[in-house]
Image (cartoon, rainbow over all chains, first blue to last red; front, top):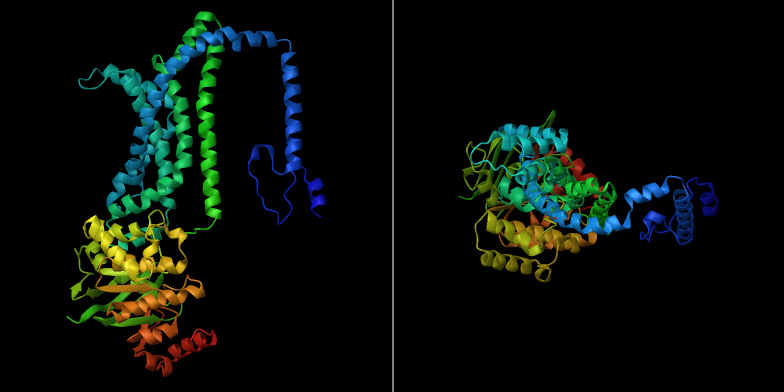
Length: 295
Length: 248
C-alpha cells in the first residue's frame, strides 16, 4: 500500500507511511528517511557540481571573480571592515536593549482594557502604524540629519545617538506587535486566577501575563533582532563610518567589490547561527507542547 | 454576624443571554452550600459574580455584612477575602508550586517572603503536597494541581471559599483525593459555596443544597430532603437524569 503511494507522490519526497513516527527531524533540509537522505545528498552534490562547472566556465566568470572574489583584496579589506563592524555591534546591541523595554511598554499600553485607557491605546496603535509604515532609512535620515540641524541646546548632535534612536523607534514598533500577540495569547483564565487572588490589574500583568507572554515570543523577537542587526548598516547613509561605509571607501579606492563581499561574510557569520538558534527554540517548544503539560 | 454571604436580586446577562434572573441566597458562617443544576443553569456565573470577576447587572451582594456591590468598593480587597477554585485549576504554569501559593500572599497581602513560605508549606503539607513544592504545575497530576489551587486560595485566609466544578476536569480516579481535601475543609468549618455535579459528595458534605434552573434558585433545602423528595418537577427531572447517568 504505502509503496504505491510513494511512487504516486509527485514531489519526490515520499510521505512517511501511516502510523510511522515522523521521528528524526535532524535533516529537515534534506528531507526525512534514510533512503531519501541518500537521494537528497546525491542530487545535491550533482546539482551543485554541475552548476559550479557551468558558472566557472561561463565567459564572464574571470571578470566576476576578479571584482568580487579577489583573495588579496579580501585579505586586506576583511580586518579593516571587521574592526568597524565593532561599531555596528555596539549600535545594534544598544538598540536591542532599548527596544526590549520600549516595545514592551507600547505593547502594554495597547493591551490595556477599559474605556479610560482609549487615548493611550490610540497613541500606541498610531505609533506602531507610523513606524512600521515608514522606511527605516527615512527615519534615520529624518532624525540623523534633522535633529542636529535644529541646533537646540541640550539635544545631542551625534549621528550615532540619533541613528540608535531611529533604529529603536522603528524596531520597537515591530517588536511591540510581537509582544502584543504574546500577551493576547495568554488565556483569560490566567488573569481571572490572578485577579481572584486579589492581585491588581498591574500585578497580574507584571507577574502572570508578561512572564508567560515573553517566553512565548522569544523566537519571533529574535527574528526581528536579526533584521535590526542588518539594518545597522543603514547608518552608513549618515556618513558615519561603520562597516558598510568602510567597505564602500575601500571599494572606491581599489575599484573592487570584494570588500562588500567581505562584509556580507561577516553578516552571514553572525546572522545564520542566530537563525538556527531560533529554529532550535521553535522546535524545542513544539516538542514540549506535544509532550503533554497541557496548561 | 453570622451571615457570610447575602445575595439579593442578582441579575447578569451576557449580551441577549440572561444567565442569572434574580438570585436570592444567604449562606451562614461555617455553612456549606452546594449548587446543583444542569450545565448552563448559571452556577459558574453566580460564583464568578460573588467574586466580582463578572460585573453584575442588578442586585446586591454582601460579604460578612459588607456590601461589595456598592459604588467605590475596592474590588481587589473584596477578592482577597474570597477564595475561588476553578474547574481548569488555572495554576500559573511558569511558577513552581511554592511560588503559585506565595505570590498573592506577598503581593496582595503584603506578607513577608518567609511568612508566605511558612503558610504555603503548612497548606501544601495539609493536602499531601509537601514534596511537590519545587515542581512546576505541568509535572503534577490533575488531582494534585487542583489541590495546589485549593491551597493557593486558602493561603489568603479567605472568609469564604467558592468551588466551581473543581472535579469536572479530572480523571475519575483523581476525583476522590480532591473531594477528600474539600471534606477536610468543611469539617474545619470553612464557609463554602460549591458548584458540583457530584451528587453523592453534595449529599454528604452540604448543609444545604440549592437547585439552579434557568438562572433562578428554583428550590433549596437540606440534602436528604432535596435528594429524596424534591418539591419541584424540574428538580425531580434533573435528579432522575443524574441517577440514569449513574452519577448518584
